[in-house]
Length: 268
Length: 268
Image: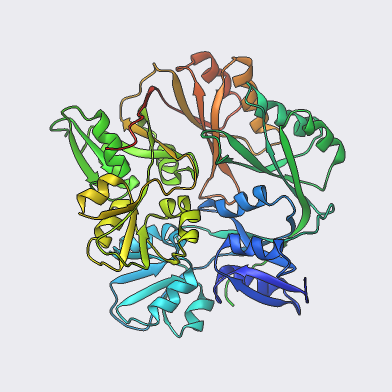
């Protein structure tokens, strides 16, 4: 039973998902969850009305746990896309550290900085804010995290914007409500194991003049080397396209139409 | 300068890449490297004649660091594919542990086991054999690793085959030699930013009756939300196909033809 409006997000407090959730929260309660799968589960069992999860990073690619949950949880839909520049800082309570905590994605994104600073004692932890918490307990360590997390845990920021490249993450606001209006839509499908299957699926988009903005494949866990496909396209739910796709796919899940919220604040 | 034949692999000793490398080594020297990028770098600068890296896992999908290196290192090619069933064990020197070390991929693959055993103190480290090494120093901890690694570090195996599903990893033997014969081939390309681009690329494969066995997209790090595509197809280098593809792609890298070596040993 849903008691009131609330958004679960991939925590802990100070995470980039928290930041994205805060941008759209208005007066909804914000609840941190430990994993992306926990966020989906909380929306599924009505503990929260909505969830906030990362879907793709411009450097590291899709967030597989989010894609897999969108595929396996048929009753959960995308309601809004939020684009957030990810500016990473390195921060510590000490002046002399030789150990760095961060999330594995963030560590990947700062490879050049870490190599230039000859920081090789790297400890991956489950989130950038967990990294900030760990660093707040040990002056010989630093965290790579958001400015928000560094401040939350009382760390001194040593360098700003240490990521290798322009770094943007897209987040999804998800719920059990399917929306059919918006300037983008998401869809997931599987295809028959015959020659030209994917080609014929893409042909239906081309016939209907629908532009794909991305396509990712993910393994079907129960059959090695078989895949499902996640697609985003420009425009809203297109019933004629969906009817045509039904003829060339083995399963098809429309995951909602939605608008994009762009946020260009680089500092909180 | 290459002094003698050698294979660099994603280490440390006892890793699944080590196992795969040992299967094909004959009398070549085996050299462990810390990261996949280090393996590519060692092949590139002739420290090793060949490299051995994971390319895809049947549960977790592609290994992004391998795909990105194949894309950015134009002079490195695939010479052989090795398929290996990944059987994970949990092992410890103690009888009473509450902390588990492993690589993040392996941890993902054992989610159900960890949840059933209520093991929530999880520490991701850079490899499954590093996990075994860590667990060999602390009786309150266990490692999720290969049987080979557990034995190498003197751990007692508590449970075998703890992964959620059938779990197979494909590895590539890479070198600077482009081979054009084999029953599979790999290719990487980018496409123009216009409607129907990917559809037209797949059309060339269809026209030439070439079956795709997989397609993955990865972000181009310098331009947000633009992608390169990695494709594997059945059959060897097809010059007519390549000529046709040149007309519909913005860049195209043939990455070699190769045979597949399947290994059905589940225990070492």
